[in-house]
Amino acid sequence: MTNTIRPLSPSDRAAWEPLWQAYQRFYEVVIPTETTDLTWGRFHEPIEPMHAFGAFDAEGRLVGIVHAIFHRSTWLPQWTCYLQDLYVGGDQRGLGTGAALIDAVADLARAHDAGRLYWMTHESNATARRLYDKIAEKSGFIQYRKAL
Image (cartoon, rainbow, N blue to C red; front, side, top):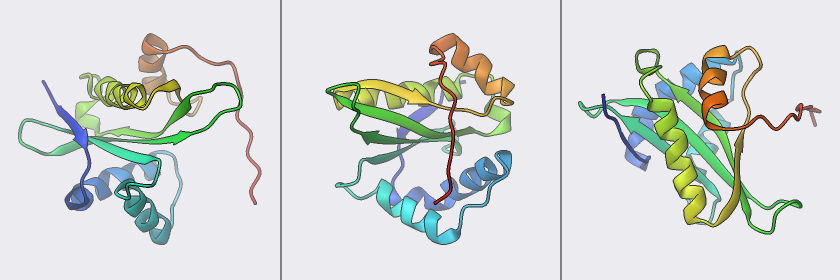
């Protein structure tokens, strides 16, 4: 099964929204509608360092999404690309859709002369970790958060 990967356009919002909601359910979070609206707008604002891609099946159905953010780093002279969100619908898992979305972000990062692409997942996300262990190396870092 071959999917088409492309940047999401403003007209893709209705198709993106259910996958974004499913992603939030998976991680047991609720992101306020106002934040979702702001984020969606940022994806389509040329001055923002945020990007969104979608995987579309042969029928044109959006079956997976990925978001990426470029930022500076104190460790590299080039940009760094953070793959923040990756979600693939259940019927597409194990078919290469997730890897294709990661490849699209890697291609974007190379095109922007980024020195690194990185991402995180929850330690309990065994399905995703099997893919990630095949295509990338674990950094060994543990993330901490402090609410502000």
